[in-house]
Length: 186
Image (cartoon, rainbow, N blue to C red; front, side, top):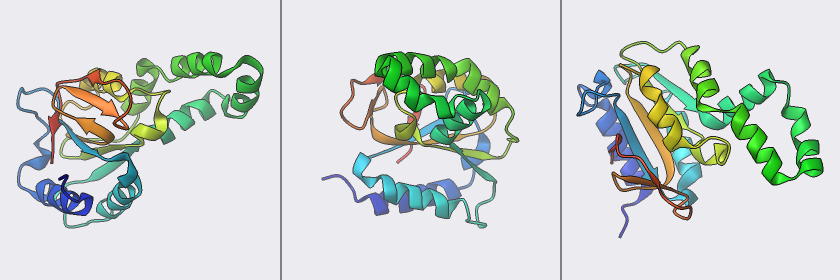
């Protein structure tokens, strides 16, 4: 039986409060990316946890939430296409819209946006909004491109689905995507 989500989140908080958590290096001296996977139906519990841990002054480092969906929307706003999306979908169809928006939110553009953020060594990034940003942003692809941005900053990915150390399976329904550079955190 899967451990209760609240108990797992309590363990996560204890783990994050541990000495050395924010060192910023994984086991292979690459970027420290840790994945907290959870059942998609627990999304609201996880969101509440993230909102509360961001306010926790007892942690010995600064936390930053990086919501991929909000980042995607900000790119759409910057490119002045947000209002054009519904009419484009109606006129050209979903496949056309998807191809245009995934090109708009390419890893190169996302990484450029991430480079503008005020992260510094000793901080920790909480990557959220993974499910919301799908299919426009694919987290496994973005994670592979991230080492240049988060060289000394640990990243905790909140992933609605499963991760077995080799593959990510979004929503526990979509075909798995290979990703083996992250560690399952809890």
